[in-house]
Length: 195
Image 1 (cartoon, rainbow, N blue to C red):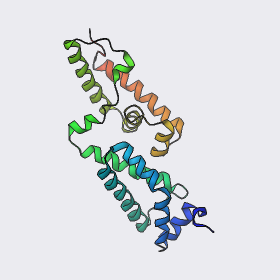
Image 2: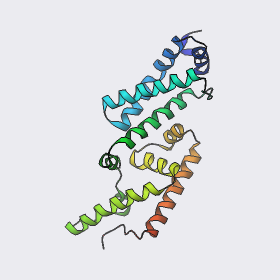
Image 3: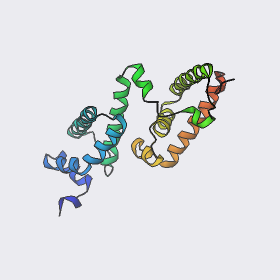
Image 4: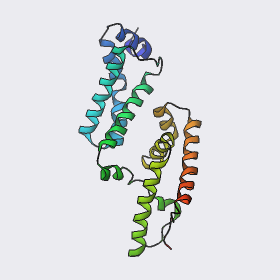
């Protein structure tokens, strides 16, 4: 049978049994998609290569330990490992770098933005900070979906694949994240516009 027709689960099974070349086939099969995904999040070639290598080191270690239990979902499993390593990367950065990951999202795109005078600009900056702080208070699964959707501009299909849930679950988490964010805004009495 041609190599490209052999299923992931067969290749994984063969690798676990000691046939090392099978892992190379799997890496070759998905390397472009995984590398592109990592790069789209970190926007840095060196960091992308580090995370890509760390992803497959984790894959190898898990397979060698015999703890891999996701037959038929190899690609999604590897993507989840890569996704978690990307999150770890951003967590390790200092607070300023973490804030920079939120730069793509502008709450004022949603609520409207008139021409701002100096005072209003200061208010706007404070609201940015307040909203970022509130997002940190959301439950982990809701915060993750909100950041991927709004800050990273990912589709719900991509979010579902990476977090290994259905699209409906991803949509539900987003809905609850927005509901809870509104409640937090009310609770903390944050005004989302200049007076």
